[in-house]
Amino acid sequence: MPKIIGGSLAEHRQQTRLRLFAALSALMADRGFDAITLAEIAQRAGIGRTAVYNHFPDKESLLVGFINHETSEYVATLEADLRDVADPVEQLRTYVRAQMRLKRVFHLAPGPDLRTVLSRGTQRQLREHVVMIESILRRIIEAGIESGVLPPQDLTVTVSLVNACLSGRNLSEDEAGRADAVRATEAFVLRAVGAQPDAA
Image (cartoon, rainbow, N blue to C red; front, side, top):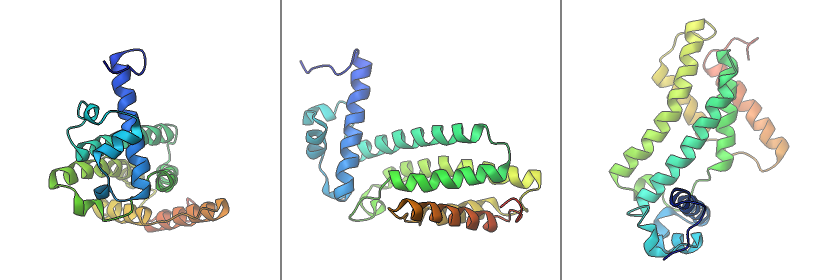
């Protein structure tokens, strides 16, 4: 019988999943998702290959599980950061900073774009995670419009443009360069949504 990690079966299951996620993340830092096998993920995680199937039926479901976990952690942290911020402009600043930090944690895998190697069903599931984060930005901008600190605007278009701006940024490895990039992006986004100069 395999050795149990942790004090209970539930803890063992959670720890095993976290090991698999860490292994997948590490392997995707080196090469594309399409070039990674479940056997390599299991070996990297220190888990028997067949044991992986007790948690995920295939590689795509493991990817969805990993992104689910990462998104849930990120959203919880972002919501906690926003909880004590009442002003929508300050909330937008907080959102921008969080998204810029996110780019340093979630590295895009080398190789083909994930959208070209995943099934349509998996692509839809991954899109749901983007929508979860976008809904926070939509809520912030909507609050800004309702309070009068932002001008009326098409929320769908604005959210799409702001997130496109944030997802396209590559931050410098240099600390001062990163700080400059965050400040410049923050100022650009605030101007783009129509925040008043004194608020920006």
